[in-house]
Image 1 (tube, rainbow, N blue to C red):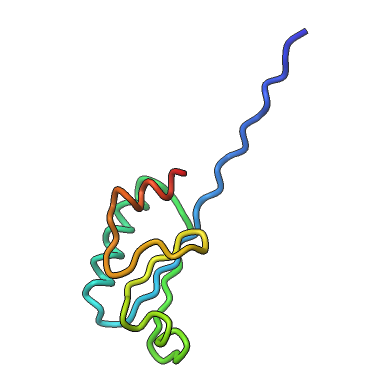
Image 2: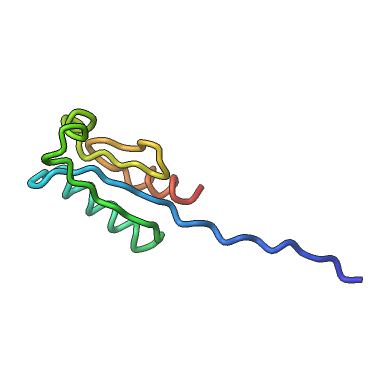
Length: 90
């Protein structure tokens, strides 16, 4: 009798949402870090421009970029590559 080895389910890719605004230099920098990490660790990425949306402006306007990983705010202003990578690997 050969014991059954449980199949490991593939890890689901993380979902990353980045709140940005057109012309935001910090946003460009954060998105560049995110792109570098994404080239090694795939994940779903959504960029949301807060410009023109009053609710989003109130929520994120002075903190952009804001990076949300799997529904949890993880970074604002800048993205630390090592910390971001660690979040994706959990």
